[in-house]
Image (cartoon, rainbow, N blue to C red; front, side):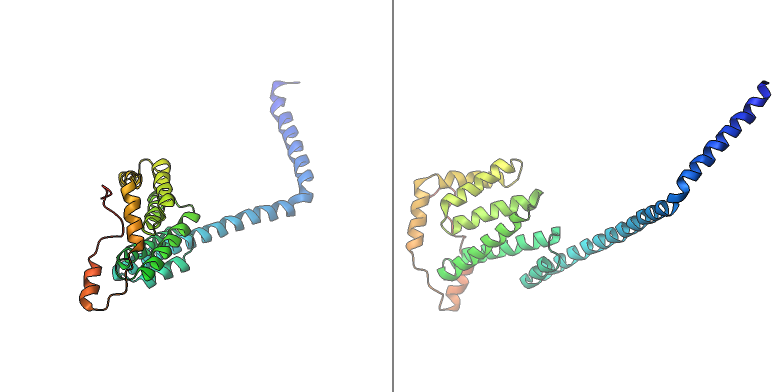
Length: 228
């Protein structure tokens, strides 16, 4: 055999091998084509869903910011209901809880029943946020807010556990110094005594405009950091 004949022989062998492979694949061509089609359909569907999610994410934050700009608690609630699971919904719930916490703390000095109702609403909202397992600052705010609500309700043991959880689980949080301060205060007997006294104080609804105005400027229902 001459060297010049080698390329032709190799070419024939390659052609035979290729044709053999084609013959083996031919019965399965429809199945292969269908599989490839499904892949492309899946990619197209993923692209559409991804685009929709991005659009919905943008809309949820637009709605949240709009509610914030008008200070409308009702609209914040609508964001949380309309976009469940989104970051905007989580922060809307946190902001609603913050509002309930602040309102409840003020009302404790003028209408203890309503004040406790608002504080419990705040605690429930914070707990609802925590059940969604948020991350970052949202998680820190929920843990700290729940502990603060518990403290304002006089549930001192649960409040201390919440503050301690924040320190352990989020050691780099800017809220840690505040949590440490509350833990130290709750460890002092004077703090428990203050809450015992406050619990026995029968705050009633304000009957005059002047009393209501004074209540609005009152501090939150918790003792100062030194426990006095």
